[in-house]
Image (cartoon, rainbow, N blue to C red):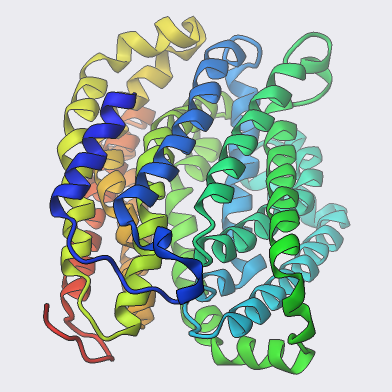
Length: 458
C-alpha cells in the first residue's frame, strides 16, 4: 500500500506547477501543497478502510445477506432523504470569500438539517406512512427498521456539513483522523453486535453505521468548536438568513438534481428489493460497499483537495484544466489494472473471502466493475458544476442519468428473462456511459467553457 501511495504522490509531483493561491494567508503554505494534501487524505483513508476490509471478511459470516439487504434498503432511503434534509447547502460552504459568511452558512445548514430530521421522525411515527414506505420494498417487516431513519439522517447530515467546513479550512490532519475514527467505530460495533444472540435481536450493520456517523460528527464538532468558537460573536440570525438566501440556488437547482441522482444511484436497490428479495438485494448492497472502498479510499480524498483548490482558482478567474489533468492521470493510470483484475477474478474470489452465501455477490462485482471504474476517475470533478455556477447543467445531466439507469436496468431485466444479473448488466452500461458524459462536461468547465466568470488562460 505504501508503494502504491508513493507512486501516486510522485506522479502528482510530476505534474505539479505553481500551487493554488491561499484563501487565507494566515493558514500557511501547508494548504498549498496539493499533492501532499491528497496523499495525506489517501493515507489516512487507507488506514480507515484497511480495518473495515478485514472486518468485512468476518462479519460476512456473522450476518446474513438478508440483514445486509435490510441495511441496504434503509441506506437507499437515507441517501434520498439526505438531499432533502440538508437542502444541499453544505455544497455552498466552500464558496464565500469571507470565512464568517461561510461559518454562518454552516450554522444555518446544521439547524435546517436538524429541523428536517425531526420532521421525518414525526412523519414516520404515523403507521400508514411507515407501512407504505416499507411496502415499496416488498417487505412489511421492514417497517420497524424505518424507526432508525431520523437518527441516521440527523447524524449523517451533521457529519456531512461539518466535513465541508473542515475541508474549507484545510484541516486535513483533523479530516484524516476523523475518517479513521469513523471506520474503526463502524467496524468495532459491527463486530460487537455480530455475536449470538445479539445478531438475532439487532441488526448490527445498521447500528454500527449510525453510531459511526454520530461519533464522527461529534469529533468534527469538537474540533471546529475549539478552533472557531470566537466566530460565534460575529454570527447573527440575520447573517445566517442572508447567507441562506444568497445561496438559495442550491436548494432550488441542486436539490432536484441531487435528488434525481440519489434515486438513480439507488435504482438497483429499490428495484431488486421490489422485483426479487432482500437477500438478492443484500448481495448487491454488499457488492456496492466493496466496490465503493476504492472510491472512498483514493477518489474522494483526491476530490476533497481538488474541490478546495479549484474553488480558489475559479474565485481568482483562473482555469483549473491542469489541476484536473494532474488529478485524473494518476487515478486512471494506477486504477485500471486493479479494476481489470477484479473483474476477472471476483466470481471466485468473493465467495472464497466472504463465504459460500456470497456467490451471487461475486458475480455482481464482475458485472459492476466497469461502472465503478468510470465513477472512480470522474467523481473528484463532480463539483465543477457548482464552481462554474452551472447548476442547470447538472440538473439536466442528473435527469438523463436517472432515466438511463432505470431504462438500462429494466431493459436488461426483460431481455434476459427477468434475470437479476441481466438487469445489472443493463444498469452498468447506462451508468458507465453517463459518467463518461459527466467527465467530458467537467473537463470543458475546467477549461473555461460555458462559465459565467471570465477565465484567465494559463
